[in-house]
Length: 240
Image (cartoon, rainbow, N blue to C red; front, side, top):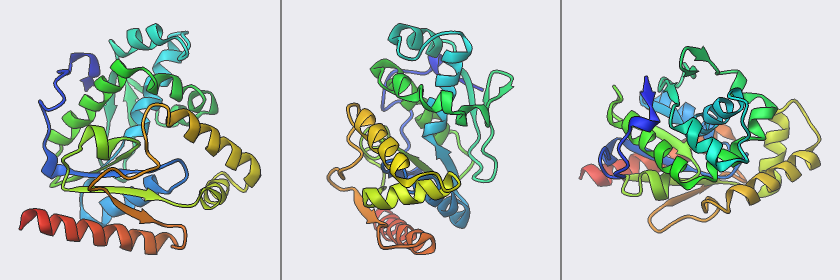
């Protein structure tokens, strides 16, 4: 079990860049499903960084606090015994002895996540958790997906990918995932989330050296193939 409050604040202390495959992207870009399948195909670990923020949001709410209260978030983060599995087929998330895998997908938690992610000190702690997990992972590499993996968590990773798609395509895909909910409502929700999160990190534009995979015209298998091709090329160039 890893308590993020006990981690070093040195951002380079546990960096093992050769183990990172960093994938960023906006909401509805497919980065979670694509990253999981890529990890399965390659026999790598998979880390959904969003689940850590969701777990912390759940932890704050469970303590009876509000994630809009930055100090309450800091206090909760100082005692946050979270456990994240790296097996792409076992996405169990625990806080202490509580299995929160399903609870962190609750709409109440989803609505509270941005408040957690906006606290800079907490982001630094959580990012160090990600580095620790990768450094200690029993895999040759870990596919790490999120919002600022390519720029903040692992800016020197040999493979850095921004997975994106046109807003209307992202909205349609997310509506399908949610059981056919109204596409306009989903689009509005995605836009609102993008706008909120983009005040913290730029995940809509690729930083220098980050490869862009635009899946607007690609189906799921084609997107997988495109990402695998980038990984094969960049890992080969790195090892060479």
